Image (cartoon, rainbow, N blue to C red; front, side):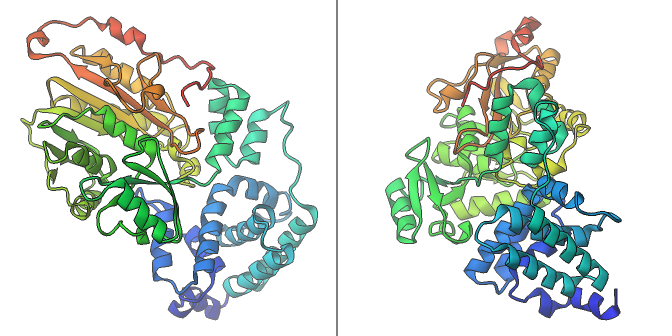
Length: 481
């Protein structure tokens, strides 16, 4: 590559150019790290760009769509690359062109190829641009290559068709029937709903709905009609009316249902041990209506600042951010919304499927177990410890709870609180589960653990309750959707 092309790639003038495809390619070149999501990076770049609204929508579709469908795109690309495998810059341009060919119906094939090749000429060497041109023209003529036979190898067939790592598809096929797995894969590739939580201390549902409708958004009530809205957004969610004023917080319905599992009563205190960015912590503070307090902690100080920022925006004076945890702290409720594989949020975070491997589950389970062990020391006698994740995997859910109960006989697994609005999502084994099949729900897991009261703490609790925790890895129906 010539020196001139190297300068061209990093030029501030070029970076600011009105080019949706280039912006998408640049984000693909530098994926988000440190727990950030590609959509956050995309929103940041779009807010600083000069792209028109249609071009911003195209950049969003290309960037997030390519991340999601990477497996299918690479399958098609690799079938027509006869020489050395392309390096990352070339591959991302090939993905850019292939996504327009196979996944977008409003861009003519000739335009998809021409615009991508033109971009390749500006970003790559001459020989690399020729390779992009040749492969995309072949893909345009021949289409997708045949998939692996579904009867002989359903895991490979489904993993390529829906663009998922094969190990994850195989895991789900080992647990669930094939039609249920395909339904999960299909749902994970759908656009997620935008769910707004209404801060009822700042406005009513009718006020929030009216403001949103006046802005051109379509709005309908969610599972909790008084406090949830499903919004068909126009433009960036951050620019919707009511956001800056602290009327709205965007949070999935399943996540909001977990806050109700905490069953926080007026005058009580809840410690949210993994509170960033503040969804559940701020929700709990709202539910208290000023009669009690929420203590927000997180081991990531940078993310903890986001909790404080959200609390200020929502004007929640009863939410206090803790930079350090007092050793003698005892509270009525402790929430551990643990870091996890995030496999319940596949629609919302396109890159989740490519970030986690089978080797990560023991590491995650160790972290989750450690957090539960730490949290147990803050639960007052008779208090509740709520464990939740946004994943579907038993190593991070049921098995973590079973291991904790086996080491802490002073705790027992309890059913959901009386009148919980998500009662239909509580299964017979005592756990709360939503699967990412329902049209407006992420996949969530929660367990409610109750500590023995003071007079019973000296009594050794039999561990037979652990037998009720179903941790078998067998095929089952997904019946709580």
